[in-house]
Length: 113
Length: 111
Image (cartoon, rainbow over all chains, first blue to last red; front, side, top):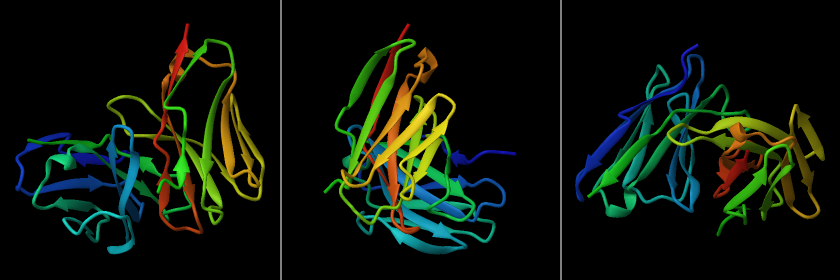
């Protein structure tokens, strides 16, 4: 059974640009959550999508957005990038969402210069 | 305002001894807790969980203890092995709401 796949693995962008990250969950999983990991901050919850609907949202500015497609694949978009957006972005899939153990992808390392 | 706290950023333990990782939370609505382990360049992997109706859950070398009155949980690893060296994240959920992670504790098991 294939795991959670995130693309790309590494990305370098300049301030002001926008970026789109992709996540393919485990087959059959309907929930996809996104997290930002920075040193000392742990994993900060961005949002969760379930069956193409945003079900939960963390405390991030509107520059961070996402969507989920009918095949459960999800994308995360960050517009007007700032230096502080440099982080590891992790995607997690689970069958039903919060309350069940999630499976994480390897993450996308975003560097904003 | 950090709802899930792991006050020890790092911990070193001798191989074969017990590792105890601690986690404190502030939200009394949390009813499910999880521990994840993360190696460098990999995503976190689920380790063990506990429901708020229990005070202990054991899985092989890993045991999680929950003290609801103190809003405290701990992960015990016995015996510790070098392969356990990783960052451990404590996470909490309130009634199927979003998962809140702690900042992590880096465990080093010394051979």
